[in-house]
Length: 337
Figure (spheres, rainbow, N blue to C red):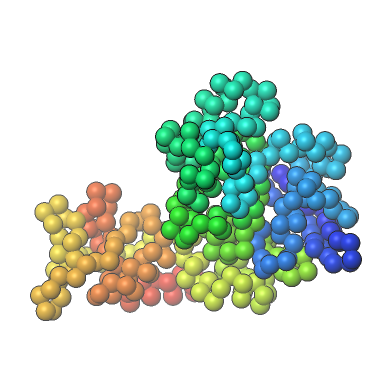
């Protein structure tokens, strides 16, 4: 558990970066600090590893005030991932990842063997090991940065805008990879981003900062979307928060109708398209399973050429449909219950 206990940071000249912040970052979970530029989120992150010291208040790890800890030892227990990865340009990918384990006493052979496993874990094959950072794409460099942060198996990871320097398609892949890793590893993670969509997607807990270094609201992504604390939070999370909140509910209880004759199927019962009045077959636009979110079902019903979302089973066989008007009735009933 990382705890901010009434933390204040005032810089020389009198500007307040962090203003009486009290916050708990739960063990084994990912807490995302998000807010507009200059709101104190990066300053708060850097106080966890003592790159910045608070003017007043305390930062504690598992109840111990970090102010009394040796800075070097403190930082060795934390992985640190930054924008643009921050790799050593003169070292190979393998040696970048092996750097901290060697400093901690592992032999070079042991460290390199572990580094190869980590590269594979973040989705990079062995062929990347001998390359240098300049020979990698931005997304590949970020993967190496994550692997390097994990190399010493730290209980805590700090991540400062780690995915902001890559394009949206690469970022989506990195998000999936990182969520998979976190599910396996269960690290205590503090991450800074300015992107509320990224915060909602990745965070178990999201802390929204407002200008002046004050906390506006702390909660789960679902809590922020369904019950914003004030107009600032409501505006920050977006006007489409009602649709986005459907991402947290599965379609398991969504009633489905029988398959209509206008749904074209292959020999295995998999949907191939909609038969229109003209006789032309239009693509379904996608399908969903009972484990998918209501947000996906809503998107499929809206984008469908006939206003109907198609459900499939694990084998991909169509087993029901949801017309958009039935979906609207279901969502209205959920809202009023």
